[in-house]
Length: 323
Length: 294
Image (tube, rainbow over the protein chains, first blue to last red):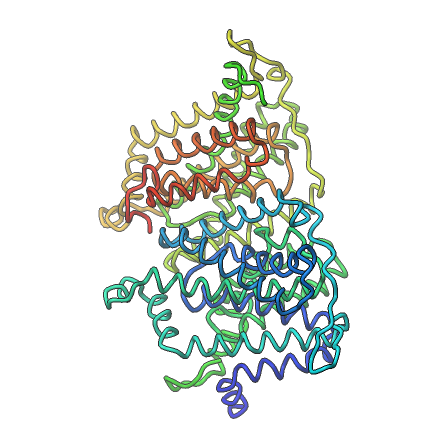
């Protein structure tokens, strides 16, 4: 048990890829596995900001939506039938949005930050709502084609759920490895210092606002990738992708799984989506159950499912790798 | 081109005052609760929604609008007190993010509960018959109910001001928003003051709900939409500053009202533009003190 735990903790990115490679064969239907994968990435982006940098954003729908619209508009409106181009433009749009909102929101500290990010996300929602020519407005952006991936002369149709799952897994694997690399770098140490005591980090000579802004943009990029993948997955972008409830999903998933832990967002996304899937069969007001569950977690289990497991199972030794 | 006559613009300005008044009622409660307890009550909007629904059903039940107007905020205030006692109190000392997260979850649950109990389709709350018509103000006619909302808002604000400035408890509340530790050191039991402020603040949200019902409609998501506008008001005015909440609430009300007249499509967006401008030019808010409440 301990040995397995050690191996997983030391190779988090590989562990996630292996786990998601077999997940489609475990869950009731394959699309659920892909959904967990994509929303796990969404929560992972949020977690970089909240769990690791200590900034509570209530507006991550903005970057998810920008990623989704960026990719969707490239394919459906601009007529560039390239999956790579779609992902690139989606992620770039989310990064730019993150830079802009981060610049404004980081002018205020503390609790204002949550309110500002929420307000700016709502601004993006209203803009998308009114720019119906480009975004489809209330009806959502439709007409995103299902493309094939050209790989060394092969054509891999992405319409096939399993093909798409592994295509998404490739990107999520890269993103997870990149995040692990960021967290292990000196920058990762600095954001931890900012989270623990930002005044002290400032006194040590770090430009705290700039560090937060860089973390914000990284977080927006990861979130945008999740959004872009989601647009390719469901071939439509509903305007609700930008709505505050989407931001709330990332918050809930991350806290259910465990904020500030590496696997927590995926555990949380899985819990949320399986609950939604199962509860949705028997009742219409499944969000009520999730809302109450979320409150119970904030009150009694603030470390989340994975965080609590880690506290029980994890290494006692300081400095050992933590998943 | 819209009608540019003085009467049309005056009517728009009055409507802005009504909308602003509703925002002020909510933002002041939000600001008081934050100032004293360091809690950003996300569920404030959902309590406003409950105020509107309770108002609708109490009116039907008691057959008196005035009874509903009095009872609905009272019930919402009691719910607020119960929430503070049973849940938020456990989180004091855990930092400001946790109460915000908890009340976000509560807000989500309340929206769903409202849909479950009262249905997904919104209700229409009419103004009472006595206030249904229009009043001739000499230079224009204006709906009586809207004038009534302005009057009630003014009355409540003056009452709150007198309470805060002229009573001993008000003095403790004001001191508590400045430095809770010092107030405790002077031997004052802040727990009871907290409860009172939470009750009053949430009751004001309930009142705002029943007043806004005829103007903005009654539906489950009404609270979350307005809480975002309230956050903007609080950022623009300066959190913890009550005059700031009044000035910013009225400003936002007027800006929205005028924009929805001249450029309806921009009405929802302009709020955030004002917020971004204030952040650029005066990051601590119009009347906020830099460094306070951060």
